[in-house]
Amino acid sequence: MIATVGRKAHFNAAHRLYRPDWSDARNESVFGKCNNPNYHGHNYELIAELTGPIDPETGYVFDIKHLSDLIEREVEARFDHKNLNLDCPEFAQLIPSAEHIAQVIWNLLRPHLPINLQLKITLYETPRNFVVYKGEQTH
Ligand code: NI
Image 1 (cartoon, rainbow, N blue to C red):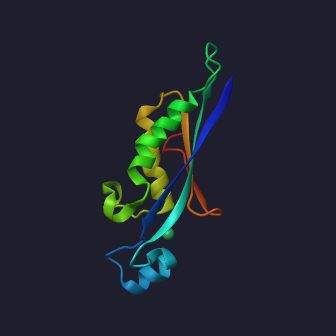
Image 2: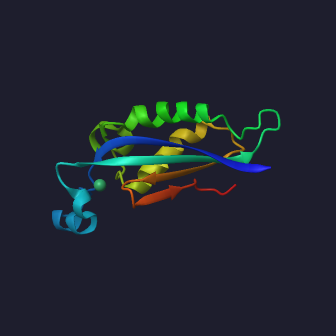
């Protein structure tokens, strides 16, 4: 029997969406408010979901406490109250769009989780705007 378990988490971070190889006008036109030169913050809401078989011995798909600890260690400790562009090497060469942040989080968590569980990341950048990333391959 297959089920999905998930954990919600939260972090605050600043970013700027900007391409140095583009003109100021083009950056402004494409990225709008997220191109603000002095950065700006978002309250990111993260939902990490694991889908897989229910272990008949424990009744668990995965111990959510372990998922919670993993998110705290790999995501919150790394990104909470940081400037993603300046403080986080993950975004030194990568535009910190919500899509890219979701992908980076997926890549940070994936190696620590059982291979038979599918990982899905949902990241809200605002209460109404979110992205979903499930990795490059389908299981
Ligand atoms: Ni923004």
